[in-house]
Length: 97
Image (tube, rainbow, N blue to C red):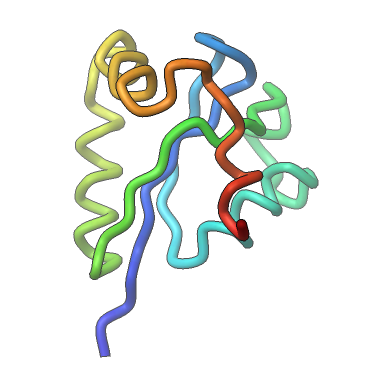
C-alpha cells in the first residue's frame, strides 16, 4: 500500500522567514509546529503559518518535491505562495474544514 505525502511551506509572517517540510500527516505535523513540539528552526524563528502545501499519492514523490523546493531561489518560493495564497493566509485553519 502506497503512503500519501505532503510538502508544505511555513512562514513567520508575510514574506518572512520560510521553512519547507514534508510529512505523511499534514494536520498533525503543522499542529506540532504551532505548538512547539518540534524543536529547532521553526521554534527558534516562530515559523508557524501554513502558507502553501501540495498533496502527492506517494511520500517518495513528496520527498523529491521537498528537495526541489529547497533548491529554489527565495523569490521563486514567494511567487509559488502568492500564486495560490496571495494574502498569505494560514491554511491550517482550512485543513479540517
